[in-house]
Image (tube, rainbow, N blue to C red; front, side, top):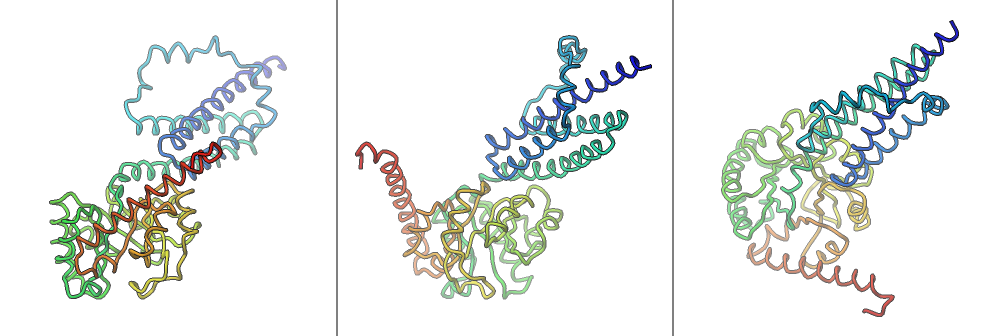
Length: 376
């Protein structure tokens, strides 16, 4: 009886050991994709933490199980060599396959721990399995964001504001923005009726589509859907991003305004495609705006948040240089552009400042790097 019990335990230990390795290996694949391919620091940290928890929770049994490992005679290797079921042809399949490997492995560990008197430990692994389910959802959000990242790979993010455009209509202003080479335009109007906003957005949607410009609607989900906008931008007090995502689907870009590191990290985890960072300086463009967050918050975003960002709020031609030198990749100047006497000339001047500031910043970095050799 004792010998039979020993053989039984040996086989169960082998099953648990194999699935512990399978789970850890699957998580490592996902962790490295998150780290090197998607460059998502928050997600990478989450995966790393759960990988270590899964390994440590098995405790002293880990050393015991290794003694019963028999990789040379494992039937699985022979079967795997003959099969092509595990073939992957793209990143999405690689991600999906490894999540299934992890989830299935955790279930096998959980069930087998129960029959060797390790019920409490098995419940830990049940908890890890549900953590992985939630993590898979976040990973898929990031995959969608990665595809959409290119849409915001630009220097200036323009926003309409008819009350500041010196009598020019939004349609006229948008046409000038497009002629100046702007690639992202957001429609933001608070004081017009829904019908007025819909009619304007319908015209702007056609203009932006004809010239391959990304068109984003602020706040109004129904109008964004009605005109087929590329994206929706919402604030901290608007509809929760999860609800917005269910309404607009996975293909539409969703941007979220943020004012603190906590809000930025939360935006990443909840599936924002990009974030607004601001207000950098005091602004009077919006009536309900919060206090300025300054360049310190912008620098935090540059160093810690991998999804695209738009620096916004009180940015003018006379202060944009320090915004660029703080690391901003994309910048929004609302009244400075829509209120200009010559919008195309204003955008040209701003782009010159951005380019010169970036070049100066790169030169300074090179000097710092080689300063010890007396380069600069």
